[in-house]
Image 1 (cartoon, one colour):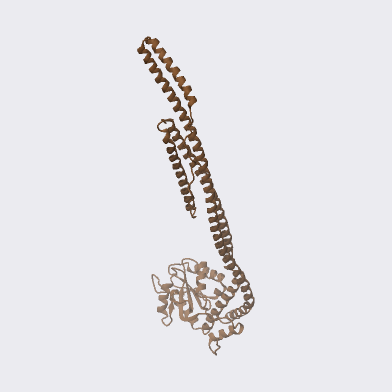
Image 2 (cartoon, rainbow, N blue to C red; image 1 turned 120 degrees about the horizontal axis):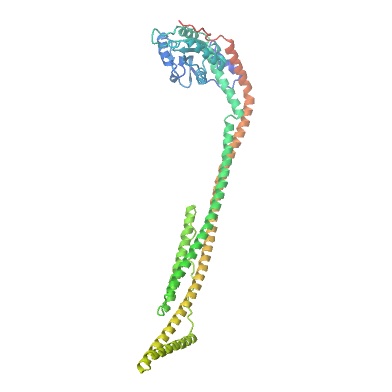
Length: 485
């Protein structure tokens, strides 16, 4: 900052630098133009056009024609006579005149609003209550583009030219810029020390941390319980599958045995052996597919293929010697045949022909009885033989299912545990990142409090000096009445 004789900007900068040499200057440039702005549909565009005609020596701009680094020489704030000012309208004026001291407020469209003076009085009171700075600003009524007659701008033009001709305007504008700059610095120190914005972030981080841990624990529990439940369900389903296949093949074999003939008995054991191998293959393949599908659905690696289950040995059926039973059957058949022969000879006479016929029929009946008795005995032996084989097959298959399911549970649980550990490590990294940010916020809060206690007194003294200058020097534009030309 440089001090210069007769330079109002340099003198103000020197005033602030003498109190707080470390504060930076306001980053604004005053543009030699009057800003005409106001709420939407208040009539600022029409007023700009009219002022350019009435005051051609002065530049007039609207809000969009200023850059972020530029501030106007003066502000003409346009309020509509159709409705009083709102809080948003007052905030709009605050933004427009943050670095400008000369403010003139106008109520537009007075040619069509007979009650515009009441609206002006209401707006004046609302703006004075919003900020005491605006208590002494000029308020006038204008009609920039009336439907009948000439525009009503004389009082506005008079106040504007008088304000722009004030020798203190440049200095007061610089004081306003410094006031805005120092107020912003004080506010930022207060907000940083109070944790404004940071506290909300801290609350959000803590909530995110708690929710992250809760979801991680819940997901781990769900995966563990879900895998255990599916394993138990798989064991039950596969056991039922093995039992049902054994029961089905037993019924089929028993039906085949019930229709067995003596010619088919020697090849029956090979047939049974083939059916047993078929059941073993079906159950082994079903177990492998079911466990692989279970692992795939849970995103895990399918278990290694295990050896096929071993079926029970299928020896030849033990058709024991039936010599004694055969003798008894033969005697019984002979007795039946003798009885038939005797009955026939008595019925048809004791002739040699009928006697031979009776003996033949008796012999055939005896042979049929002996053969039938033997076949029934063989079928009974085959039924017991089939039952023993299928029972052993069922026991072996159930054992195979139990072993495979237990092995799969061990492998899948180990893989799931590895994934849970990896996710836990990732979760721990994310939680550590949140904890680190929370620590940074805590450090920033302490640093901000220290910085505030060190720098705030000088800022407040500089702000007080600037505000004293603004209050002590003459006002840029005194308040005027509400009459029009």
